[in-house]
Picture 1: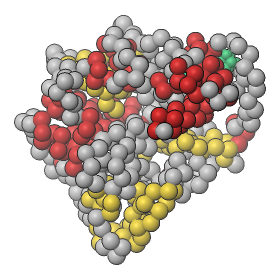
Picture 2 (picture 1 turned 135 degrees about the vertical axis):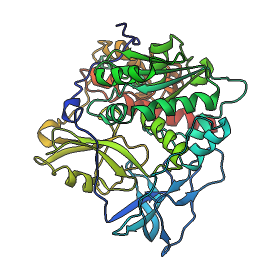
Picture 3 (picture 1 turned 60 degrees about the vertical axis):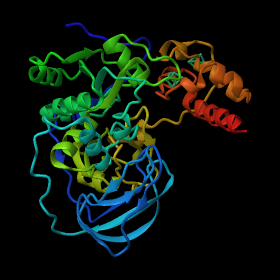
Picture 4 (picture 1 turned 135 degrees about the horizontal axis):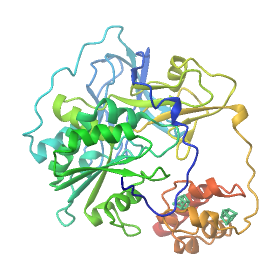
Amino acid sequence: MKINTFQGGIHPPYQKDFTAHKATEEAPLPDRVVIPLSQHVGAPNEPTVNVGDKVEEGQKIGESEAFISAPVHASVSGTVTAIEERKNFAGRAIKSVVIEVDPSQPEKWNEKRDTGSLEEEEIRQAAKEAGLVGLGGAAFPTFVKLSPPSDKPIDLVILNGCECEPFLTCDHRLMLEKSEEVVAGLELMMRAVKASKGIIGVETNKMDAIERLEGLTSAKNDIEVVPLEVKYPQGNEKMLIEAVSGRRVPPGKLPSEVGALVQNIGTTVALYEAAAMGKPVIERVITVTGPGLKEPKNLLVKVGTSIDKLIEHCGGFIASPGKVIMGGPMTGFAQEDLSAVVVKGTSGIVVFPSEDVLEETERQCVGCDKCVDACPMFLMPNMIVKYVKTAQYDKAELYGALDCFECGCCSFVCPSRIPHVAYVRIAKAEIAAAKKK
Ligand code: SF4
Ligand code: SF4
């Protein structure tokens, strides 16, 4: 078997055994959900409901007329009890709709239509109406991604089945448990952008998923499953495109520059469900896991459910928690307040006990160049840090600060525990501010 990959990257401990073989369970319905009106990249939504309104599961509760945006829907049936600002997982205050959940919920999304005859525009509209965004965390509206400009035709759709972040297994479970939907969703995406080829890239620590998807696609000439080396950040768009097709996206450009479109596995399943059942993004599979949790699980969770409810459902903490991360440990957000809620882009919650969380003090760079060798974008993270520390942001830009996609490989290998990504973020903010002047 030929195994593809990219240059650079790292091999962190993957720790997926906590949940990789556990089938997805439905999380219990919470008493209340808090649904942020903005869960996407683009213009924020305004509420379309008022306090006191009765809402039904799947009802639109927020929307915007802007092109780059995605509506939000009630994830449960219940009563709107507040519309107010709440802090999201990143600590930002976002206007949110609070819904008290009705004890009995209607059965919905049982009927499927055949998606084989849907036209391009019907597929795009299904994605738009469903409020579909990149469920891998990027949260860019899928409808916009499926509307490439005419001067940038797409011939290749790539599904990201890498799930290269340690601990997370929700996409792995979807590839096993909803493999037909993965393939059907890929075919819808290919039709929407008129791509002639589809590739599903999967790391070889998920051989069961590779075999399952190969079994479903072996008779399809236009779809290929490509096994990939287990390496972080194999699932980054640029790394993935290069690994499966040999095409290299130029610095500062988008995948459409090389005729490619990359989508996450969860997004692909959700597109199929939107097109076949009219189901909006009201729930998603996430992995709740880590050495600090009693019973790690893969869970189907209603958008707006709080982290503490899910931790409780997983048996609670084993010992005093040291760190709770929303997302994966490489790119996720540490949580101070466990009332933060799951949103469309949440892929996991990882809990570490306090004994596993070391106090890291940044030390002097020792010039070992390990960060340079690890950087998959061929940047010199040590030089970017040097110029940020001396406020020479123009030089940080020359060293490619804007091309950094914040994977964290450099910090992971650095013996001096330098938090490069934090410096890169400062550089990006300063460069943007300078350009506005
Ligand atoms: S500089 Fe950016 S892209 Fe390169 S390894 Fe560090 S975080 Fe990743
Ligand atoms: S890995 Fe750390 S210590 Fe080594 S060159 Fe890079 S910044 Fe300096």
